[in-house]
Length: 278
Image (cartoon, rainbow, N blue to C red; front, top):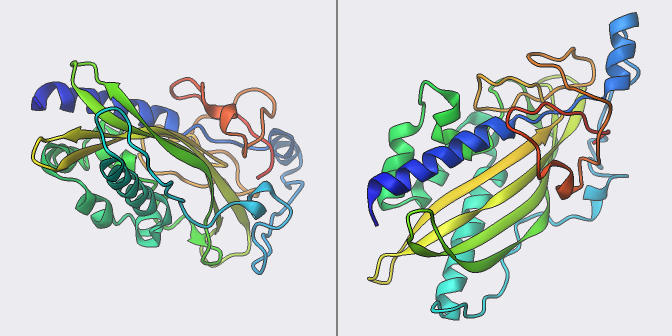
């Protein structure tokens, strides 16, 4: 597998994920009233004993469920199962590892990368251009902006495997991933809180090295809200209901259900939209 074409492809995908990642949301009615009166309509306080109560997330899973594999094309069931397990480990490292989400630690994620994928990630982690910073593959909240409510993150979605071919003509096994992930968070030391809802799309691309080993390349993008539209950051900054928007303001009226995976699928790069309450 040639390094340059694959690395270039992944760099382009990271750029896209960064640009669409910060597709934040703000309740515009609440925003208008706050602009006029200086007082928001609501002051959200998530029930610390029941942080998902009354929402769709109440019935979601508490983990990324790995499916039972069957053989696909030239790949036998045990190889596909290995790909599923690695994909589940990547998702856990990105969304469920508390030190990663809230403290910016990427060591668990790095440990899952090998070969050229690991080299490419490490060379571009901390890139001066946030759009090319490979850390955008992770789900990091801006340091000091959020603390978790409870020990549970809710997850709904699926992964499935398909044979695929990349832009350079190399065949690989693609494990597609589509999920809604819900993190209840609060401003550190305060009661004001939100449920941060993330729509995740993409895949992990598995290249067979011919010696029984895979090389796995995570390629995905996401939208998340409510968050501020700050295009010069690779992290997400939650937008709490008592705050004015930072950066770009959301455009248009409230659009879509934040728990609906289809709602953000076709968002444009750097689109700052508005969603309903989470």
